Image (cartoon, rainbow, N blue to C red; front, side, top):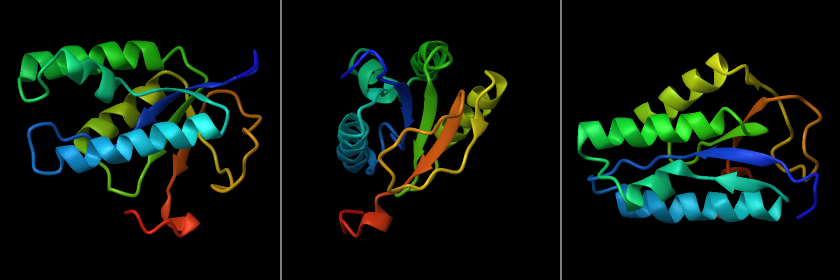
Length: 134
């Protein structure tokens, strides 16, 4: 990665303590790999902080979300992966992104060129690629 590498917050479903959690973790790792292959430096607070905090405990979930949002506000872009739907945590992330000055931008989801916008909110999906995974 170069000095021009963009740092991005990755939002994808987590749903700790549910029967979807394990599949959502697999999906989040796939999102991370996608961002890395695009030349981005991804940050996935929902994968990192849940290693130490319990997402099913309200106080710990709140602490995790607040820490993730504090870091995300300093990154270049906020990226939402939508193949598995949108969770309440992702909606909190979208609200925080807008409050931090990020704005939705249309970008061809298959393009490999990073958008020239400052502080974009980007929406991505794998379904356009015909992967069949989700």
